[in-house]
Length: 220
Ligand code: 3PG
Image (cartoon, rainbow, N blue to C red):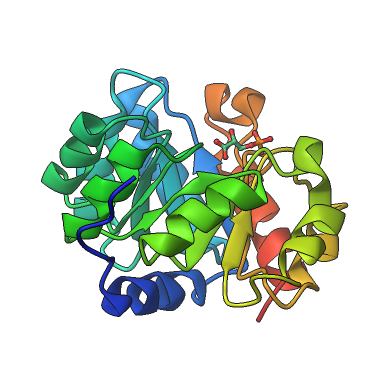
């Protein structure tokens, strides 16, 4: 591994300003393009202005474009980015940030040059150390619950206290506080705010209420 260039520290500051806006980042998987704006609006109106749209469906990028236009106060990230090519697509739709489930050297390298900040996914100290060498200071911890949960993240804080995390994967309203109480956790992410049954039923009031409860219970 040769590291020619490190991430500028301004990227870390940008991620901090996004993550400071909300303790909970809903993870959205959008099957029907027409759901994108009402779903995003319900979450933002409920008090959660930072959203991650996963690249798990064909309409995801178009959904981000529409949400950017309709919800200018929201910070919208593109998640499930697996390759630099997908990272580039996220740049093209003017994503505010990029989230990856794991971190390859190719992604770490690409992120150093990109104007869009990335939260690279790590689940071990070794992956974290690789990112750290590239200058990354903010990470997604994924899959959080099955990788040791809040206990593991607390242990990461001993050798590398300057790394801060957004854990996701298995987080719910019941265990979110275990993470949010740690000094190295900025916010948590999860799909529990966007249940498929409510989206399919176009129950935007129900989703707004879930967001409202989360925003009220977990606030900076
Ligand atoms: C993610 O990509 O972050 C996860 O799909 C979210 O995990 P969850 O569905 O367990 O909340």
